[in-house]
Image 1 (cartoon, protein in one colour):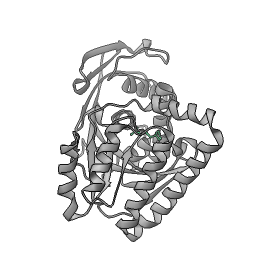
Image 2: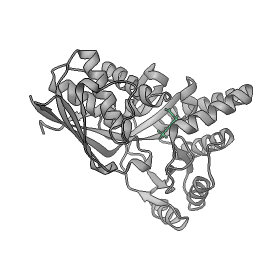
Image 3: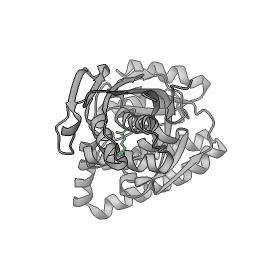
Image 4: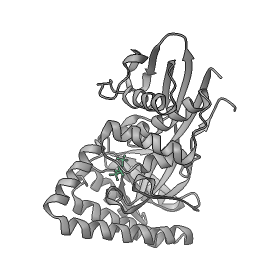
Length: 326
Ligand code: PMV
């Protein structure tokens, strides 16, 4: 095989963000917006990357110069590091032409970097017959993300690999698929791009200053996540909404909520949603609201009227897959 096309889904954090970085569980769901990666073996000894969605065209680098400590441009960082780690791990070296294309903007916080990382490693695994799957794919992808951003639980990689809705503990210590129906969710985007590593560091500062209090907040978040797991199965949306509101209050206490997120969350609650919370690191990006058929449209209008943008996504999407065979 000399070329391959692989796709991986983005994700939404449902419950448990931030606490998951400290070893507590979270619940994440894969969305039907995907990142596609095509990879082709080339004769020259170059890694060429095209990522037009993020304004990167015609980027190339000598394979022999691929190294860990490089300052790759935006759009090339995760691809180049994934290639470097794959080559090292599987003792391969080859010229490559890699193109990435995303169904969604990298601004939304749907985890485009993680989906790209997973798709590149999976693609190379198919190209060079390495057969990396499941846990091995997670471990090499997680190493790649940590090499670049230094922090993170890896929950988004798990969603990109396995898809569906997952119970996840940091570093992939536990990854369990949860059985859920199509959840009636509305997603609102604040219009503000947030930087996840910065927010993780802010919470770490708070942890240092108030270790006992933040630990209690993480423990409370963990209780919310555990209860949410049971309620997801019984489909008691009233209780699930309450749990989302509790989770939102706890995230606010950690200092990652913003005025814009709050406005969208309150607007959805006033529109009759069962509950609403920010989704992801906070500081901007997205919020989610649990609705029913009647309140869905009202909540969507409320998001728009409050200055947000509604993102149409379906949850429980399938994990990484080879698109070349389809
Ligand atoms: O900003 P997002 O959507 O990538 O979510 C970050 C979630 C955190 O728990 C804050 C970080 C992590 O890696 O788990």
